[in-house]
Length: 316
Length: 282
Image (cartoon, rainbow over all chains, first blue to last red):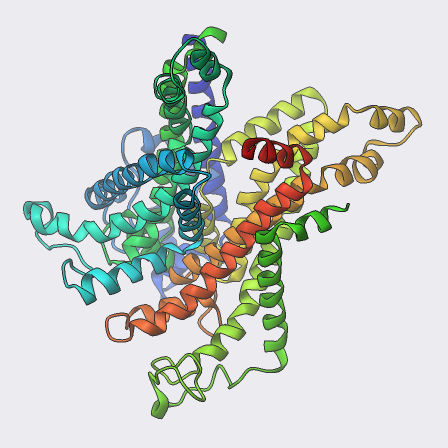
């Protein structure tokens, strides 16, 4: 286990290094001059030079990269080229919307996927199982934007139960309104991601039902259903853990789109706005934070999986 | 029986193939004919309900939604084909490097693939869009790279498995070079894996087009596209909910067809899978 953890930490560090280098390099090939862009069309050469040395753009790429990476360790992610405010503060503030949204979505996705996936596997030869299968295939094909809009049409416009968009100005000091604002966005992501996860739970359950250890348990006198529950379900649970990393990444991606649909002031909406404004220091740090998040989640999920899966434990 | 015949005998495969073909034909036809000019705005017919001559109604500037959808199919086809070409090139290149080269190169590629696979397509897209601005290329490159890495991971194992087969050994013994073995023996024998993955990457590309055009980094506003139409109509969803339904349906139907086509292709090209299915039923 320790050996595995060490190798995995190495891989994580490598992943962070490679992705930071890719993001940094990609954003430097921009045609045109950032300093020129900030100074505007009537900036004098002196102004442009001043901005360039202000931002450190006159130094070598390697020095700029080193400074950015060094800043990452101390929590200094640079400042916006447009507003001048520190990136780290902005991200921390927006995370107060995005993280609850993500957690809420994950809970909904799991609440949909696990029971329905098990049911779908259990009833696979019956009409209800087939119907479930058709619904998940359909939901897996629905664009997130559209799912959100349809939910708005039904629950905000039609029934007038929930707000169609926006987040209360008071934020979490008004927890009731804040939570209500997140219901439809979280439901949008939860349903779409839940459909994908449900297909996975279903096939994992079918696979577990065919495993030798379930058959052996049944042969030793357990009923088929009890063998499945006692020995099959833990295997299904382990399979779910392995895809949880991908699911969480999917939820994060869904959040970027959904925050735009529901005009929620989260990290995703900030990223879209900054890409639109070509605010490169913001985009660079935002992309890195999001990528690092995905990599770290993958790392944690792998470690948990390794720690709890007896099949892997024996081999280590 | 060829794999195409087997695909045709799977009902969902047949239906999916027909839908995909129809979308391709609609896109082609829209180049020369649409019911009305999709770009023509007419304030007098704004928000017309479905009827005649506007079969699916009009948008807020009086453009015909049915014609816009037909013209938008072109963007969908371009994105799906473009992304799958990039994906196959990236996938074959990485898989070949990861399966057929010397051990250090192989392992470096394996690590690179494992790292890259964690990158969500959307983040790749935002990176490209931040540098070059929004266009359909953003969709093509981001989905192409993202799914190319996926294909590489799936195909690497397959290439290595077939690379150990006797007929490949015989080919090597008779003096074929690595490149010749790859194009004459390995790729034809692993083609089914690639075809299945391609169908799924196309589905992902169509979904990504919708999402990225909505975020303003996909299709430029002058280009008819389903994703763009969706984002233009979303502001009026409270007043004209029906109009938003059409582009969403078009996207969902296309993605569903491509997903099912991929599933059916897998079933048709993998004899092991057909057998386990019939066993499971009995």
